Image (cartoon, rainbow, N blue to C red):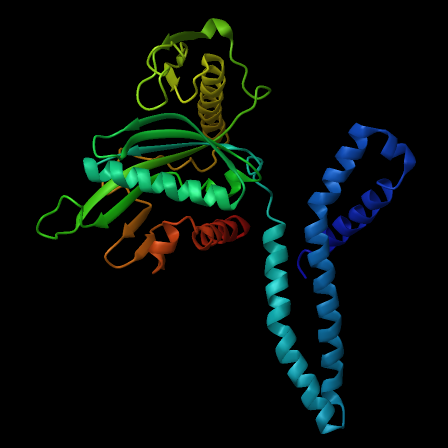
Length: 353
């Protein structure tokens, strides 16, 4: 195998850290123990896969040796075993190859999800609300937490804009390919003649930055408070609980009015601001090192699409990878793993090429 030496080294290291975790000196040092435990956890899956590969390879090699047996029945058994093990070997080897691709350092981060209605008027706002519901359903299935920081509703019950913080296990690794224009094709409720209309929304997924990564100088921000608008109870329009933060050096403005507490709204707004500044800094770094630039969400025009949702045909198509699924009804209920898995596999293959 092409990567056998590297995998041997990883297996040796895995055994070493496993022994260290049983060392009383390590156990008594909380920081060291957590560091060792984290390293072991990161190695465990790939080492387990490598050991599975080696066992299957041993079985395969033994079957190959039986090909020259004089007994016809033994030769047939060997041929059957080879036919069974060849695809299994290829599968495990491909999984190992993908596992060795350098991990995206952002994969473990929480995200800021921003959805905005584009072209299509009221129909676009209705679709924006459905897409937010789709992501929320998926987040629920993953046991992630969704916190809305700001929302702007349309007169027909859709969403002109919604910004939410999504936190949990490996959120960015699953949602990072969702940024872009999402196009919908269907007959709007207001359409009298049954014609299919096309509308579009934009989705942006930003990795959340923590305070260590992005320091915000209090002198660089202006904080305004105002009365919240929209649903939220009797006190929502009578107290100055909503917060608007302006980052003076960049002009970035973030508002939050989801909570009744001004302190909580400010904390949420700062998280969103920090993530936007972090994304700007990441973009600068990508340009400096010549890496491929992040795909921008575009203007919301119908032509700048990454995915199309066709309701009459129950079809969803991701144009970046040429994938079409005839299960739009399930996708809209948050069953997004077929899409996410295909995108991850596609981009992993590209990185490993």
